[in-house]
Structure formats: C-alpha cells, structure tokens
Image: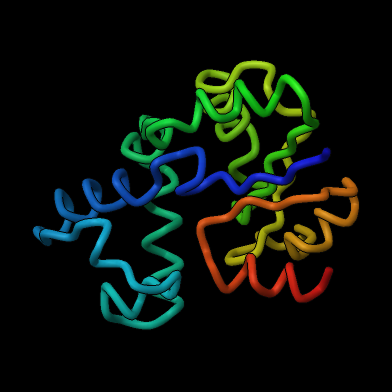
Amino acid sequence: MTIGIDLDDVLLDFNAALCAWHNDLFGTSLTRESFKTAELEKTWGGTPAEAVNKILDFYQSDYHWNAQPIHGALDAIRKLKDDHTLHVITSKPDILKTKTLQWIEKHFPAMFSGVYFTNHYHAAPGSRRRSKLDVCREVSANVFVDDLPHLVHDMSDAG
C-alpha cells in the first residue's frame, strides 16, 4: 500500500510545542485540550490574519524545530515502512521546506519516499497551493492519516 501521513500532530508534536511557545510568550496557560478547531483565532482571539502571523512567528522559533515526535509515531512508522510506501503530506508552506526536511530526517531517517508541502494555510507569493487530496491522488495513496477528522471524512467522501 501507499500511505500518506500528515506531519503536525501525527508525527511532530505540534500542539505541545505551540502551547509552550504561546504560554511563554503571552503568559497564557493553553493545553492541547484548549484547541477545539484548526481555526486558531477561535482559541487565541483576534483575526484569522493575526493567527496566521502568530503561526508564522512560531514556525521560526526553536520551540517548533525542537518539537518531539508524537509518542509512538516512530515505532508505528518503522512497522509500516517494512511493507508500505510512505509519504508525508503537510499543510506547511514551502518556505519551511529545508527545516522541515531536516526535522523529518533527524527523527524519522530514511523512512519516507517523499515529502509534500500543500501551502494550505499560508502560501508565500509564487507558491502553489494544493489540497492534501490532490497530493494523495498524485502519489496514488490508498490510505491517508491525519489528525483532523473533517479532513479525513472529506477525503473518504472523495474516494
């Protein structure tokens, strides 16, 4: 089988790092449970544009690049790698490609056949925005693993 796998909160413990960063910088006491939606402005307050700017700041922080893998992810990927072709499909923007690939290689060395960036939430000028579904079709993925139930449901509905 060919399996597409999301990065943030599936492989990389994004929310733990994000909470630590936000709490330290803004004096909040956020936990993973504070986030009920991917629309971060609903948790933080402010506008969607302000939330994007905060995330872009977080992406540049050591909190993000020092984030640990999700507990159990490495063991699961090792097992899947034996019998399947694995691809990372992330919403991250292309501008984070170099550091993202370094993080993946550090924590999941030589385990993925490809890493794809969709630029979903914040595409830089000139970057191509595409859906995870389009990438799954491009790599002929049979299965896709993501932490956002609505996205998995939408993909399932699309076949």
